[in-house]
Image (cartoon, rainbow, N blue to C red; front, side):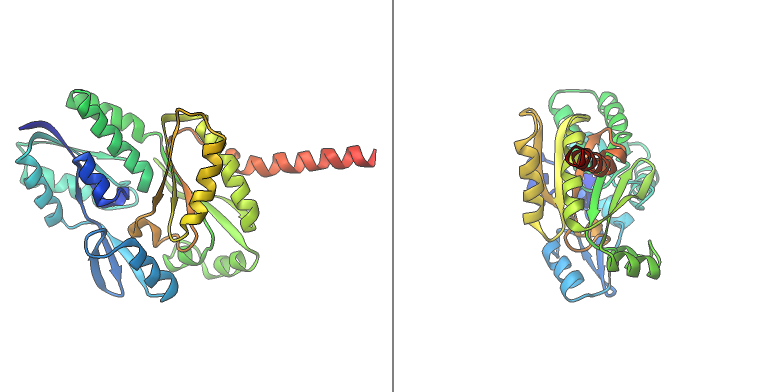
Length: 309
């Protein structure tokens, strides 16, 4: 019997094949399409969800796993290992964390189960899952692994750039006039998901400007990583993610792993089409994004003064 088994939920956005390769069990979250429930990555694909959301414009929401799903995964894992570490989506944004703890405490009070809130979403969550697996392989104790994961969770960040405000409006996160005005003048929204929750971190006019600033922001993030890994995530436009990732790979140190991954539908339905962004563990502040624009303005003004002089 193994000493430690790592479990997660499907909102980490690793594929089933990737989770199998890591030997990590997962609890599926739900996608709800016009009242009908689907298990993420089990009986519906991300592309199918995005097609129905973006092309067919169906009403789609998401929901946390049921207590029964957690119970099944716990039972299976306890047959393999003495201890369980389960990493969940952000407790402020999802019921996953509270449900996982409730089921563990109610049905398995005498078993060694620890639930860790990753305080983030998607591929930042995935990095913690990968780190947990690596620490198990290195023979670290459960206490050492949990302490490391909780430290990292304080520094996890997901940073998606939204091409439209439409889906924030559909989810009730902004008002109608904000959506209409934002879409009319081409506002792109940068959202930060970290230990504090989810907030709109910056706004910029125009897709081209937003992508330039995102790329330059990414270069600064690479200098402030705690774990030398960064994900470039996307919803339905993989080419966009490849463009951003290629730029970072060409201009980054060789010791940093840069990967591309599709945002899972549970997260992605709140962003919509053409979302691109980062998942990482490290330092970030909004000036890394907005400061690019200010630096460019200063540079242009300086050149104009030279020409005029």
